[in-house]
Length: 265
Image 1 (tube, rainbow, N blue to C red):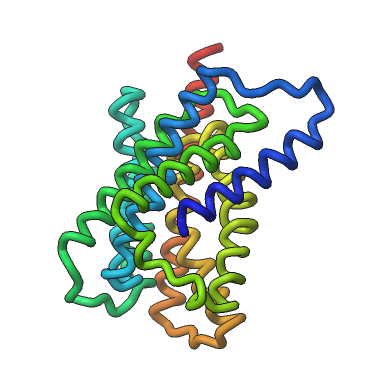
Image 2 (image 1 turned 180 degrees about the vertical axis):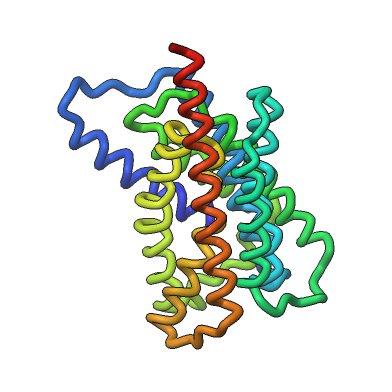
């Protein structure tokens, strides 16, 4: 189902981009397809796919805590390959953001399968690698749709190889599941992933990494507005810490960008 989501989203987005292009319609070059394929395997198959598998066996709170380490992976990998140390403001922001996420997650389960928790850790690392790899690569019109198509196709192949087809019961799919799939295809993939694919190629790594801290805050706000969930003092404290972390990281990233601009001039 994860693979189908990405394939459908990729097809729709590719068709829209193809029909709305004002310039000469040219298919992506072989080198662009290769870069998109590797990025898709790291982000969609490794990052999103492993997370979807593992979250069937690990509670959401535990998964959120492990995924909260993604910004640390991203900044660390970027520092290693870029040979530039993060600023003190960025490091402080990462620490505050991780602490805020822990508070926001709340009561975490002490149970769960260690193997699937490890898969979430691998998913976090794969997403970070894919994000850093995508940096510096040109963002073309069809970049996001290509990544969705390749990532979705590989995910479907992995699912079939794992024998997941035998567990699929079409009659058991509820209307709520179909609406959920529609939301993931449109808002989650066509809009959300496209925005991320653009941001990761144009903004500093530390700035892009703040998405992992903003997501829990958005989830809490939506839970309050839609599901009428209660907002506790711990939630407010965690949200405040995360907002502070984003400010610190953005400030550190901006300082780094200004220093690079001065050195180049």
